[in-house]
Amino acid sequence: IRGTAAIVGRPNVGKSTIFNRLIGERKSIVDDTPGVTRDRIYGTVEWLTQEFRLIDTGGIQIEDQPFAEEINMQVDIAIEEADVIIFVTSAQEGATSDDIAIARKLQKTKKPVIVAVNKSDNEQLQLMQYDFYQLGLGDPMIVSAAHGIGFGDLLDRIIQVM
Ligand code: GDP
Ligand code: MG
Image (cartoon, rainbow, N blue to C red):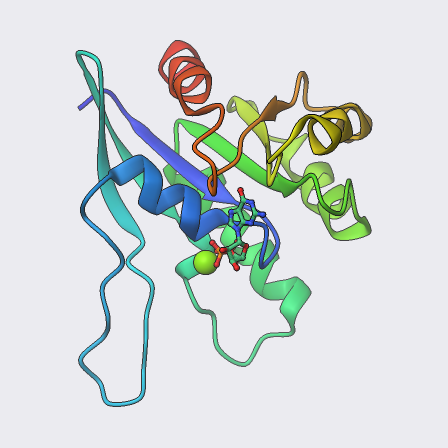
């Protein structure tokens, strides 16, 4: 195992869809507590000759915390546990104020951060990548978990900076 990558980002940008795509067949699990569905948050990714651990911090539920504080704590966990942080955003919305708040926190870590602009489903949406330079975290990468776009490049970059 080469290292650990952690996925962070605000709700609904597609973190779990990306997680499932990266770990392949081993899909989300359902908690056996009645009425509770809990995301599977740990997986292993194999890419070419390499293998790394993946965490979906969006699936870590922190109870009795306001929404912004929950994301804040998920980002702390990612910074603590990961060798590489994958910051997922959405081409459908561009850089939102929540994205900018997460970026400020990530700018303080020395760990490598990859900005993945998900929902880049077509050429029109892919133009939105330029909006994410304002996050100050380097060159954004376009991905579409729905269409399977950009995953080879994303995996190459994860391994390269890990
Ligand atoms: P999370 O809250 O960040 O974990 O987001 P989810 O993985 O649960 O996805 C939120 C919604 O976005 C779901 O309805 C997904 O089907 C949708 N979604 C995920 N990836 C893509 C994508 O690449 N393109 C589009 N159009 N929708 C996506
Ligand atoms: Mg999720």
